[in-house]
Length: 248
Image (cartoon, rainbow, N blue to C red; front, side, top):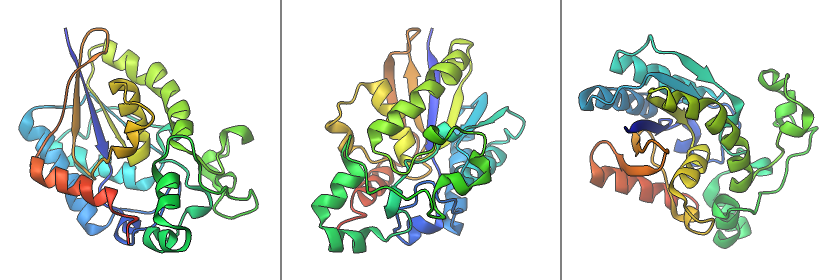
């Protein structure tokens, strides 16, 4: 017996185009991102890897990617789940800043630590800052201690894992094929857990936009095989571009 899980980073967003730290800021897809989302859905249909349910964050770039992709795959009817635990990593006071400009101000080494180290969070947002999630009605039901003012990847792993165990694992064990449409860091958190990637090595994992990443899992949910669907050279080039975002 084996199971399949599909991870999909949202298509290019408007702030991806502007090379800004986005985090929990709710920006939408660019026109290119919409095309990427459609292509991802078409690819899933072509390859015959069809999800039984879709899971997204509460952010529109992930929601719209899932909607466009499911339409292209002719799977609009499958159940949809949305949860804040799948949100992108909260980038604190960096949210909205240009990555290269921030690197020029603080050094590439410092920005790399903020972006990629496992346990070094960026400077926090003040709770009185309009960008703080306490001012967003979609998080009104959460306890104050659940609302981040900044996060490192370790924090993201800790908030994503309850969703993995409580929602995704039961669907997998029931024979489903979940599709998780989320963000670079929330998906890296899942990948780290599944693949046993070390806290140092995860810094080098770069997930490109809208490239379906398929996991084939054993009955114990151990990874048997993991691969991207699509043009492998183009996927590698897109991953390299993600890695270079904060370089001068």
